[in-house]
Image (cartoon, rainbow over all chains, first blue to last red; front, side):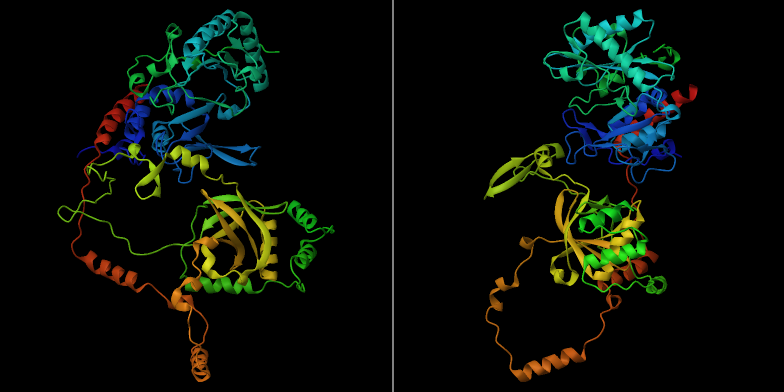
Length: 292
Length: 316
């Protein structure tokens, strides 16, 4: 008896030959395969986190617009875990998807959730972040290469403080730096700490701005601290982005962060070939911060 | 309760909030010039039993297609919108006579008869014969109206003053969270025989709409625009109708009167659909074509990836 696709996954995969990324003719099937291959690296990081999706049912240039989705859609199978969180802004319960297994990840890919976003805390302690997040965001003409320069300054500063920073490309123009911490502080304190580091960075480089009002200044790199808030999110490591080249938010070794870094070096076709995983031990090195 | 008080403010009256009943009375008095006598709704129970035994109606859908608020001035009644109309009919699939495989549609270039991939398709608006202005999907998306999650009711009208030729599609409205406001609006419309006239944006189109009651529910019927309906007066043959003689008219009126009765929708059925269903029943006793679909090429690669990943996850 020959093994069938449905013997390997509960997900009823559909329309696999649909083109999702027209420029390189990347199909939905390739997107699903990408997430299957990356699952061992993605799952440990997104485990027990309420996820936010951006779905592109007709691909990134498709007929329908993409949409942001928090609530588990109609027809969500029973085996998909969800977490109910009351939204104070829309005044209703939102059923967030929690992805702790391969089938759920495949199911997300089948929903055309090209982009997956995660908050900086887990379902059991939503108000206590276990990651500090620095969004190193260059404003053109500043580039990823400039962001790399700033990220390296940031790295040295964090190492000096005895912290262990991890870095990934955003998949677009910036870099994301995270520090795993014990979930024992509030977001408010975490945010203040990240902001403080940003302010200190401005003293070391003219390129850096630390305040939101300065974000649109051309050629500057913004050290964004504002995302360190409950249910604010970052794109998850190894998530695809809706760019023409199907770029990936890719975890890097610090040795790879240097001048000339380009987002298009890390795409759906190149990232699967990368051996090793710079974020492998992310949660084994939780730092303890004493925040006032 | 909040809805009630707002409702009262809107209608320009400041009233005491005591019991829902006295409140209902007062609001109804404002809604229309009816003499309000509140009695228990004894009919509902009977109606429910009746529909139970008949069961000729379509199955109720389980998922709503829209949720938002009925907005009357400052009052919001949160509701969910459900499809109420089905277009049942007979559907056949096109198969290839030779091997029974399902057929699909492709878009072909009219110049060289080559199949055009979807990402090479744009939309053209024909401004003159063979002259097109080209739009891509992004441009069109930008022009689409935003769904504002509101059924905006601007006034109340006599339900029968809207001619059915304008009726487009009817949706059931169910209360979301607060049943009080919903129930109040329902009862008020039932008592006054009025319908709310307003508008709604569904998906990307804005419709005129009529909010009315149907069998103990608030329902919304989207309406057609006046420019989508032909005025029969524009048909030439109707311009010179000859007046009938009195005798003819009397006879015709007598026939109409003699044949008058109650309208019963259940007397009608789609005889073509019924016959086809019988044929299907007959034929299914005989030979059936079973199609063995070739596995998609993509699926093979996925299976390889799945086996490898599953193995990796196991060993962890």
